[in-house]
Amino acid sequence: MENYQQPSFKSKTNFFSKRVDEMNVVASFDHSIYLEMAIKELERHGINKDNIFSIPLTEKKKPKKNSEIIRSSGFSLLDVTFAFGTVFSLFGVIYGFVLSWGPVAWGLIGLFFGWGLGFSLDLWIRKKQFKLEKKKGKGGEVMLIIHCAKERVTLVKEILFDHYTLGLQVIEEEYKDGVY
Image 1 (spheres, rainbow, N blue to C red):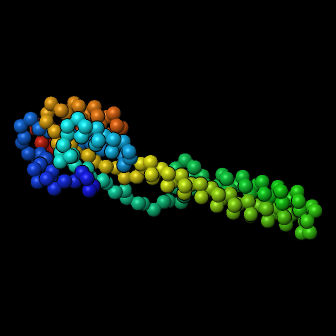
Image 2 (cartoon, helix red, strand yellow; image 1 turned 120 degrees about the horizontal axis):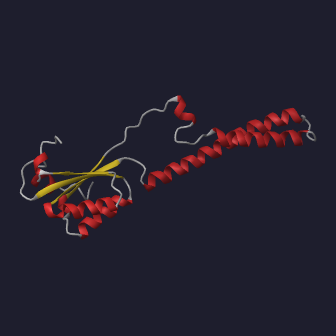
């Protein structure tokens, strides 16, 4: 936002006014390194920093429903939990024959210990994966508005598509009211 929300861009550009041979290209990106690479590529091809405007969008944090808590993003916190519970229960029963409380008590102790360990381990791994995904670009989207000459629109579109834009629209003079 600090680098690509120049006051001069806002003051000189009335987005939907009539301009001769000038257009706006609006693109949507995930917040990732590809966005930065696209901006640098545009600057390398002569699009001035004052003609690029970025708008980061915030995500709405919605509370999870009960069905989403168990299997929200295609993974389940219960798989490793039950696997560890089974393994530690088995070890508890096996070694319970030689320990003082017997196989049933040690089997239950192993079961609860395995559940706790499995759940904690899985939760810790999921948190690390979530942080890594957030670093790589999972998060809000960024809208990018590029003000350029009509003859450069094709070049701008190619650059943006090469850098994995989610969507792109050229706002032409005939559609200045936003009705397509």
